[in-house]
Image 1 (spheres, rainbow, N blue to C red):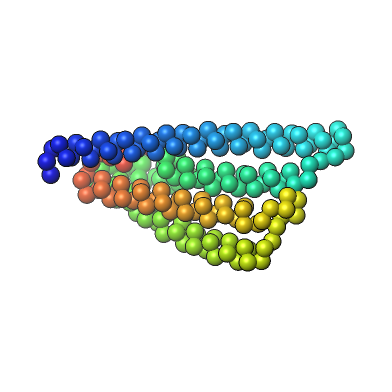
Image 2: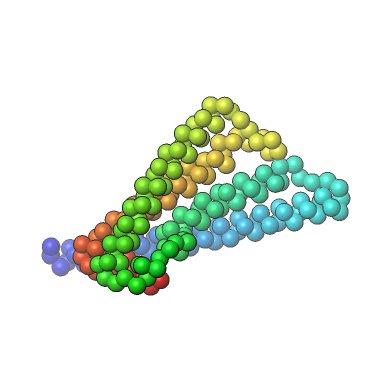
Length: 182
């Protein structure tokens, strides 16, 4: 491959990672704002309940459903940044090709587990949609909170696939890309 083409590809990859980092930062900010929203709803509801003897209908549901969406989005973000909870004793001491191999094995396991969870969640979502159930407090279709699982697991599977490709590429080249200090 010619050096100019190789450099152009490196530049494209760097730009793609910069866009991904910016999107991750934006998601991080949105999740923080959503958490503040949940806290505000909780304070407002508790104040109304204990000081004025009335509470918002569906406030508890709203908080729970928002947190479910936040957890799934946060899980995708954590996997993309490799900040998720993991037992990484072996990879933390491995270097070079061994580290890339261990990361690739982890990524493959995450890809298959999350792809299966996406499929199972989708089947459940379809079943719930057919029943047409709605939440008791807010009256929203139960497909809305359950869709968080489909979206979250699908996002996790996509991120795991991208990480797998990156780690396999680094393994093949034995390069430092994809290697991060743990």
